[in-house]
Image (tube, rainbow, N blue to C red; front, side, top):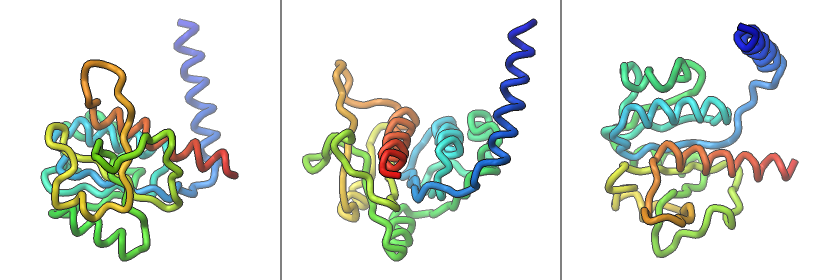
Length: 179
């Protein structure tokens, strides 16, 4: 019973803190290129809310609100994170490039660097791809840079929502260190 009271008091404090914090967003755009799982998309919204991203670009077959599966994991974050749907990922990339936002594809390629060694520019668009096939071949040539997470296990990939969270918070960590 005591833990329940503490939990509620902690949530009240968090809500009060969020009211006094600046609503300023980090200059981070997330581009989801044909992410097939609505649950992963919902997780991207929750993580995007936690990091106060500028916008999420939902592309191709990627689920977009309203969607019950997406909402199940987003837990209302679709209301607090700006988003836009694009039928083609290339349209989102071209829009971002027109705004002079560098495009960084999160994908293991022969050009990708370890994300620990990458200096995240401000602003930046991080592109994440399909859970099985990755970022589409049509999008790869449009990238300004490529990063990957080092894999130390038997598998060479991780869940897209997990990679998104790790990458997103590394960018925020770097930017916070510079201020």
